[in-house]
Structures are given as C-alpha cells and as structure tokens.
Length: 589
Image (cartoon, rainbow, N blue to C red; front, side, top):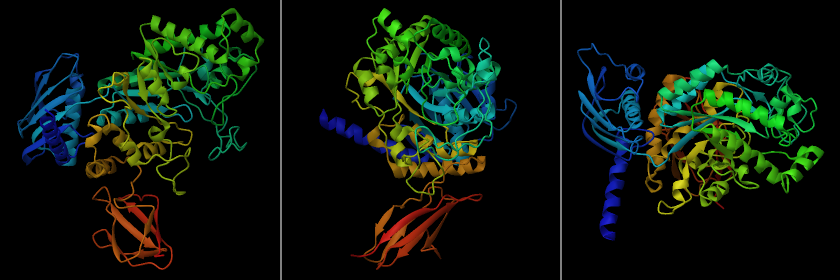
C-alpha cells in the first residue's frame, strides 16, 4: 500500500508540474494540454446554471459573450448545486467547445482561468482540474489611515476575483478616521471622518515626532456606496467582512462623542500612528447602546456571516484609573482589566449572535477568556491561531511575518517609506498557512489565511498597488496547491505573464528583482551571473561601481575581485523602472 501511495504521489506531482503550460496563477492542481493554442473570438453560454449562481448578464459581459455571433466558442456550464464542491472545477477545453463542471463558485473561477489564458496567450485544448483547501482566502484593506474612493476599492476587488480570493476584510473605523456613515450618529462622519493633518515621514517613537503636515484628510462611504461595493463584490463571489474596531482604536468615535470614553474629555481625531489611551468605556450602559446601534446599521448593510469587531491593542489605562470601572468590576465580579475586556467582547458577541451573525476578532480577544463562538484572526505570529484551534475555535492566519503587506519587500534603503520589517515575495509564496497536519483534528479549525494592507504609509492608490502586487499573487497560490508541490521558479514563470498583463492595465506593481539576484556574492574566480527578468518583456540594466556594463543574453561576466565592488541592477518595462537592487561583490581572501 505504501509503495502504491508513493507512485500515486509521484504521478500527481508530475501532473501538477505541467500546469505552467497554461501559465495560471493560482496554479490549478492538475492540467493536461492535448491540442494547439487558440484565441476565443467570442463566447456563448449553454447548459445548466441556475440564476441564483450567477448574475448571468455580468458574466456574459465579463466573458465578452455575443449571442448573435456566427463564430464563437461555446461554453457549456454544468453546475453542481450541492455545497461540497462549490469552489472547485473541472474544465475540458476544445477550440469551439468548452465544458465546465463545477460548484457554485468554481464555475466563476473556471471562467476567470479562461479569461486569463486568453489574455496571456496560453489558451490551448486540454484539461484543467482545480480545488482549494481553504474556506477563507482573504485580503484586507485599511481605508482609515488614508481614504480611497469607491472606484479604487472596486479595482482591488477585481484583482481579488482574478486570483480567486473570497473574503474582503474592509477596515472601516480607526483612531485616524471613521469611514462609514451611521445615520443614528451623524457626528461620526461630520467630525470623525476628518483629521487636521498627518505625521510626516516614518514614525520613530510611540508618541510621534511632533512633525505634522497640517494637510486635512477626510472621506467616508455613504450607506448607498457601501451597498454598491457589497453588490459589486457579490457578483465576483467575494464576501465583504466589515471591521468596526472596538473597544480600542476608537479615537475618531470618541472625538465625535466624548462621553464614550471613561474620562469624557474632548480629543481630536488621531494624526499620528500607533495606539491611544482614550478607548471606549466598557463600564457604562451608554457605550453598549452606542455599539449596538452602530452594529444594527452595519449588519443591515453587510450580509456577511462574519462581523469583525477588532479587539486589538486596547490601552487599559483609563479603565484602571476609573472609579466607575472599579465599581462596575466589583458588581460584576470581574477580577482585572483583562477580564473586563473579555466581558466587553463576550457581551458584544452575544448581541451579534442574536442577529444571526458571528464575530471575528484579532488574537487579543483570547486574553481574559475567549468569547464562546468567536473566530480568531491571528496577527501576532501564529500562536493565537494555534491556541484558538486547540480550544475548538475557528482561526484565520494573518501573521505579521510574512502576511503584512505594509512591510518592506527588502531591507534596501531604496524601498519607499514603510512601516519596517521585510516580507519578500518568496516569504509570502513559501508560507504554510496551517501549522497542523491534515490528519490532526485541529486542522479543520484553521479556515485559511489573509494578507493585510495597513495604509499609514500609503497616501495614494499607486502606493497601495506597489505594496500589494505581486505579493497578492504569491499569497493566492498557497490555497490551491499542496505545500510540497510549490516551486518558486515555476511560479516566476507564470508570474511573468501576469506582470505583462499588469503592464497593459497600467497597474503600478513593484517590479521584482531578477532571477539570479542575491545580496552578496563572493567572486574568487571568473564566473557568470545570470540575471533574468521575471517578465520576459522587461529589460535588465547593470552598473558595476557606477559604470554601465553591457549584458549578453542577460548574463554578466565577473572577473576574480581583489577589492569589494557594488553591482547596481535596475529592471524596467516600457514606462518605468524598478528601484535599484544592489549586489555586494566580495574579493578573494
């Protein structure tokens, strides 16, 4: 039996490696090319596909369908109405006839795959089979530190759909800005959505450096705009999970309604980053009335099963100093402020559950005792997610390393201003989101993973695109193929096609280092350094000690060195260049 299993795994591995022929990201589990390449001139849909599965008019527009065309590729949809295979698909491809057998969402993913292959010139007759291991495949976007209009949020959702993510975590409230209209509390947007300035440069101390630009920042989404985004995401089989962070990160709300804090003192919307002492007061009924009113309007806008309530980085100083809280804790037999936070989270969860929904919170909600039905989003490493799973709670992995896309791509001083750290493309691609074996009973509690995009240092959409892409593409792949079958160079081959597509779309992604790049290199004898751009249409330029060096077939010839030298490398497309990448040549000792 063991020998047969080994043969089966080798066979599956061989099939999986063939998927580069179709150039798809994320990579399907198996593919088989059986015929020539072709281009779709148009499409027509036939077969069984209930209206409840698709907005068929959107899908026809998406696939450039023309019911009156005389030359077209017929797409035969055979949609399985059962729940089990909803994200999976099988596709048989012929030039004039394509059959898709899929679950509810899988049919849409199959169409995404067709569209990508057609755009990238890799569409050919053959077979594709894809299936995911993860129930939750998420991307996050903070619109509070810097606000982005609806059209840019839609661009983000389009990219999520292209790479088969199914949850959009929309971070809507913060110390630095309240971004969602709540009709019962109009001051949240009249006051809380505006700040008078922003910290200049990178913050180097918890209290900020006292240097602000005095440029007003404002913006919020009306409830009609929220509905528009939710509907837009739904067409693309993406669930929008709203986050209303509480009881911390509430300075914008407290600036609007000072009575919500334990001190009641006037404050302004935050201009620096980090955390603030003023948080919601959990020791007064007026706070819970406010929270419940806000959640009522949020729940009415978002059909998501999950409502994210944050629960992270709560500074409890005002609680400790409050005589009101001392009395409240004694009355409710709460031993310390950690238990007080747990009391708050559990009470909010009970209210959310009463509305037929569930809460997600950052891993701090474990402190003082976990709410009965909560899902934990583990960001301070994986420990919180592991603890939640062992306690039979669902968890989503989003550790700062490597899934925070506000961190730098490298340690180079040339990187644009960011929060620090280093999460390379390779770090993201090689991440294993479940710390448990498939055969471990805790495995089922790890729902998936998420990339987080905090925008303290992202003032415009170009910067967001730069920080997110192509790390989003790398993250998408970890959900669809077994960890042992991932291959970085195979991924680069397919990523090159996506970079070319993004060039055509005008997407301002970070141009990656060329294949063959390394930080340092010892040169003791004559050798070749191969520097291949990931996108074949990009150009690699090289300087050694600021002297331009011509390359032949992307190969740099290095002579034995007697002193340290610096190689500067720049990769460029037709419109822009990467930041400089440096290799330090070390001489023979």
